[in-house]
Length: 128
Image 1 (cartoon, rainbow, N blue to C red):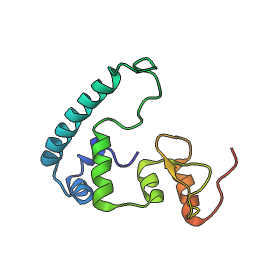
Image 2 (cartoon, rainbow, N blue to C red):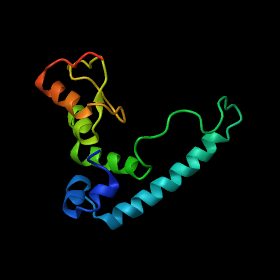
Image 3 (tube, helix red, strand yellow):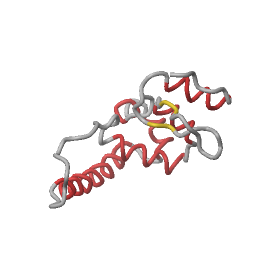
Image 4 (cartoon, helix red, strand yellow):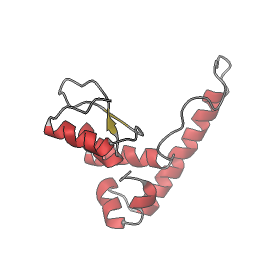
């Protein structure tokens, strides 16, 4: 994955270019967001009408710190889905949007970069 907090913090100029923030203000913002997220998750997991056990479902591909990072990058740069997929090394989902480019799905693995490149060139994805 190209855009991750652990990688971008090693490149302060790129971090600032993608987020509009230096690392210190982003860390403050991230701490605020993650504390709100933790409280929302606590409330979601303890609601009385919950059907499934806590811990079920698939795991996140991105770390919790990467979630606000991707939000800030999205708002600052406003990348298209193919570009966002390339930055995240996502695989193209079968089926397309109205533009025919397909929607990126994070954490698919496989040949994500090649699938995004094919979507840019207009080539159809390989079967499989």
